[in-house]
Image 1 (cartoon, rainbow, N blue to C red):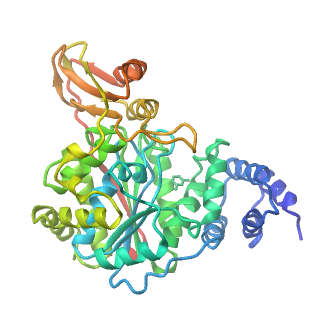
Image 2 (image 1 turned 180 degrees about the vertical axis):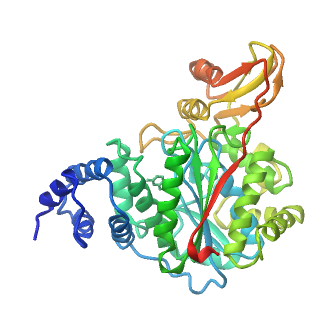
Length: 440
Ligand code: URA
C-alpha cells in the first residue's frame, strides 16, 4: 500500500487517485498521522492538478464522515437549506430563512463567518444584541422543530476535517479550486440532515468565481455531487459584479434584511430573496412551481408572519427580539462620513470587491481568523449603478470607529465608483439556473 507521502507525490505528478486513497489522506489528517504541512502540500497539488468527479465525491464523503450527520427525522417536512458561495452585501439568509420557514418548509441552517472580502451570516446575526450562534446540536434540533428554522455555526460534530482543511486553504492560496470548494461546502451542508439544497453561486468581481464559465463549472460540480442519493438541488448563478442591497457591514446588513421582512428593503435584495425562496418552496414541496413559491413568500412578508417568526427565532437564540421593530437597538458607528460625487453624470460602475475590502479595513471583516469583527462599522450606498447624480450629491456613507479609520478607506471607497455621461443599466440579477435530476 502506498505511503501517505507517496499519495501526495501521486497528485503532485498529475495522476488520478485510486478509490480509497483520498479517504486515507483525510482519515490520516483527522487521526494526526498526516501533518498540516503535508495536507497543505496535497491541497496545492489538488489545486494545480485538479480532481475528477469521482475524486471530488470521495473527498466530500470523507470530509462529511469525519463528523456526524444530524438526524432531523423528528422534524416533519422536506428540510431545505440555502448556501451562498459568498459575496459583498449578501445578507439574504437572515430574511430568507424566516420567510421559507413561515411558509411551512423547515430550514436547518449552518452558516459561516466572513471570509476574505465576503461577509458571513454568523457575524451579521451576532450584531443582534445577545444573539448566540454557538448552540448545542440538541438546541438546534429543538428550535428547528418548534419554529421551523435555526441558524448556527459549524460545531465540532459537523465536518471537522473541513474546518482543518479550510484553515489551511485560507493561508496557502488554495481557496479558488472548484473541487476543493465543492467538497468544503457540501461536506458541511450534507451534514445538516437536509433533504434538498438551493445554491446561490455568485459570479463577478465580488465573488470567488469571477467569470460565468468558472461559476457554471462550480455550479455543475456542486449540483452533480449534491444530487447523489436523491437530494433535490438547484443552483442559481447570480450577479456579484455589484454589491447586493445598499449596506455592507454587520449591523447595517442585518437591519436591511429585517426591512425586507417588514415589506421594505432595496429591490435587488427583495428580488433575490424571493427567487431563492421560490426555489426552496418548490424543493420543499409546498409550492407547485416557482410562481406559486414567489406568491407564498410575498404573502409571508405581507402578513407579517415571516417577521414574527424572526422575533421568535431571535428570542430562542438568546437575542433581543425588539430589534425587529426598533433598529436603534443595534450598535451604531460613532463617525459617519458622507462621500459625494466629484462630477455630475450617471453611476456606471460600483466595484463590489473594493467596497468589500474597505469594509474589512473598517473592521467589519477579518484579516486573521482569530480577529473579532466590529458590528457597527461599514458602508451605506446612497447611489447605485444607473443612478443619475449631481456633483456634490452623496454617493456613499462610511460608518467608522473614528475619523482616522474613515479617512484610511476614503480613497478606496471613492475609487469603487465610476461616473460617466451615458447611463448604464444593471444587468439581470439571476443569470442562470441549474437543476439536479431530483429537483425536477
Ligand atoms: N465556502 C466554503 O464553505 N468553502 C469554500 O471552499 C468556499 C466557500
